[in-house]
Length: 353
Ligand code: ADP
Ligand code: MG
Image (cartoon, rainbow, N blue to C red; front, side):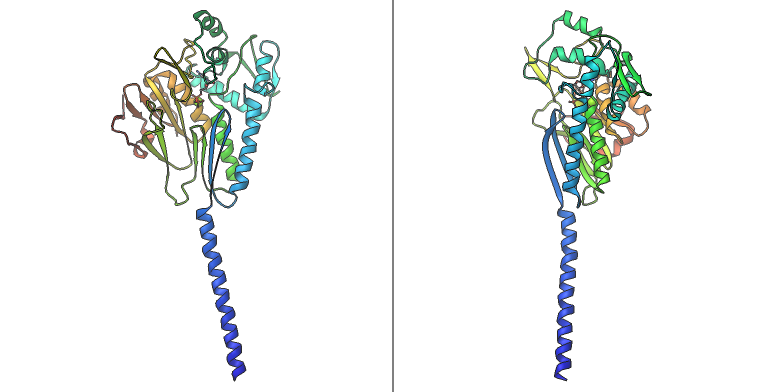
């Protein structure tokens, strides 16, 4: 009898311990998933990159993303002497250059966006960008004759794309390609692919303001992306857009610029004039499924001017925009009206021209 009681007691204790162990494991597992946010900040593609990942493969996902970003930078940076883009530029007017699938895809896209934006986006802008040296330690205002001479070299129609041989060339000597206006968008799309392969369900990819919001936040609510106040250098927002699985890319005059005699010279160049764009738009945000589309269109949209830009974006399915003008008006296209809120009362909401 006593033995039987002892046996039952023993069994009871074992079961009790098991219940405690299993329930602790379940609680910890859930905790791990909800607290498993990893944020990594580093420098790459000429900007500050911030990756925020939730999920069990977070560390691996971030490492793989960093490797992928490195590969893209090595292929496309004009600041790397032997990148594929630099090799195309060195051989301009002489021969075409065999390139990787990455570079071929990006340059092909740049030509698409040049056409769509009526040449306001033009990747052959490099000879002008190098005159201004904006974003470097010693920017300068080029002379009128330097600009006139180098403007002759700017023409995206002179990019020779050979799909069969996967090669790219430029028609004339001294012409040069700059994918700075689109490469971060492509890179964001590639990081998203890496994360999805690692089964990440929730992440925020921020490549210097070029944002892709993967899934929802870990608490299943939408990501809130702030639209920076273009007339404020402290990084304040004028409004917030709530998104899920979307890219949000902004081109603004506040990212890279210099001031001389009270005038601001920024890094988005109008290919018609060779000078920083003077349209009424001072910030152009594109919301799209693919970040490469957002990046190409945000630069082009900035230069095209309000009327043309709104018309273009409204004509493209699944793509929306927020344009801020010099007079603090905020124009929002039809697809995102319900997801965008102005938070700064100095700015006026406009939903049509
Ligand atoms: P950011 O690099 O600040 O995100 P953008 O995507 O608008 O901004 O790209 C600006 C960069 O694109 C410039 O630094 C320059 O390298 C390049 N660029 C400047 N003007 C043009 C243009 N009209 N078309 C294509 N690229 C441009
Ligand atoms: Mg861009």
